[in-house]
Length: 115
Length: 114
Image 1: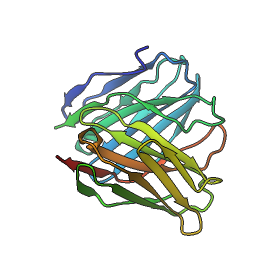
Image 2: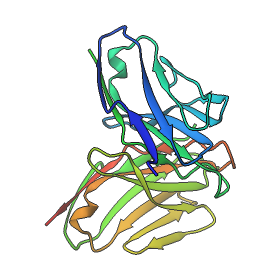
Image 3: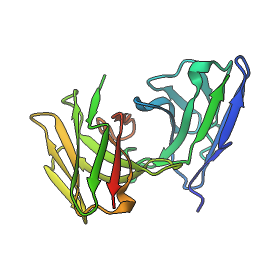
């Protein structure tokens, strides 16, 4: 099993450009989420999904869109990149086997720089 | 919303000594407290977790303690080894059987000195 796969690993954008960060998992997890990691700020939740067709906002959703058309994929779209979106982005998934969606499995991250 | 504070931000210990990382949370309704380890260039990985109905949990050299009254919980690593060097994150959540949202601390960079 590959687990949670994120692409690309690195990306440089110019202000105003758009792009999609890809995330795929092969563990049949119903829950998927996106976090951004900034120095001194830990991990902050951007958007999450509890199943195909269902998405919701996290702590810092502005400037990002998501959709969940399949159980496996959960792409994150930056509509018009801004320097404030320079960060490391992590996708995570989990299952409800233990009664909740707490135990997260993370991908290896995408390092994004917006110039 | 929930606020999680984590201390210290950096910690250096001699190999073989113990390391302790502390977190406090603000929402008394939080009942699930995981710890994640992030190695360089990788995503965080769950290493241990505890629920509010338990005061302590151990897994080999790692233990977590929880004080609900004081709203703080701690990670204890004994007999530290070089491979323990990493960034550690605590988190808190209200376990809601389907809609949990973890709030993370700001991380502790642990360095084991050989």
